Length: 489
Image: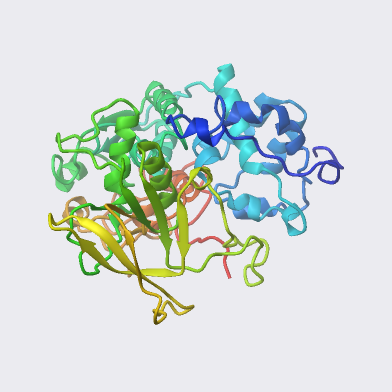
């Protein structure tokens, strides 16, 4: 194990972010020279806090089955190459999860019962960033080709994980993406200050060198029909995500200046990378000089907040219908479940106001038909309006960040005529197979809106099932079943 007394001698320590006054004026990651480098002075000691538990509950918290105690021990011993091998054995893209995953492994850490848990996520990103920096991460092309072809629809984390696993198994894999560049929400949904796209691009370069073919700018279901897709490929993996956004049907919703978060964020990401913000030449949605209201208190709302700050919003208010959570684990959410606690993201450090336990009643417009204000009301524990608490706040830009209700049905899903479950997701059996032979389902399109770590785990698992379907057997790992869910109470 790592330092036998490490958890007794050392407290939890994380990397310091750049000063707010500096970072809000650029789009770079909020850590100096990247989080992996920022962590190097402290990470060996932090890895040494791992207790190498007899039953490591961090494994339960991570659907990928990351071998966390082993790579903690290797980092503490300064065996970075060994740590990288252990990390890559279960996770195709630790540079993504190390930056974007909310770390359910840490809330399941045994040390977290009565102390601050091990900084598992930070150890993970330190390993992979050091491996990339040293040139240790190389392409792993297959030794032979199976002669079988697979189409993966969607280039988010689930699709990329399935594609890399199947390519390495010897199949010829083509990944289709309707956007102009590969990456899905990793490319245009995640702001640069959370993950610089160089981390995505170098992983895609590795995959190209392994043999994966990427076809961006193709609308499967439009440019390429479902019938042609099934004729052209031996198997198809649906990994398009849950992109149908939840709307807010209240009076005034049709006013100008009210947009879904995923209309706003991709344009801002393109602009921050020096690209044309829109693909059709339309005007970019910007927060500059406006009173911005963000409806939704999750990660997407925080992304809108950080982006609006960098664009120069006059004021920013983030609304959440739930009450403000406490700083400590609630009694009804005991270890090792993932608790609802108050979290401060890097964006929240930078500005804006968070308002809890409120519901939007109406959008108010100006003479030009654009939103000018928002009427809200406080709600009780049953989300019922509290009489006498109505008020208006100014808003010339409203961003809806309330999550997603499932996959988009028109197009490919309708053309394939796959069966849907009771929630409107694509139904799959225990082997990730859809109701149409040769079609498999991975990620949010089958699970519903979830976390990046679950998407990668599903991509790996679906790949194992596709490999078995094409060849009769498989040696690919399958970390989770479609019905598995995070441990909750």
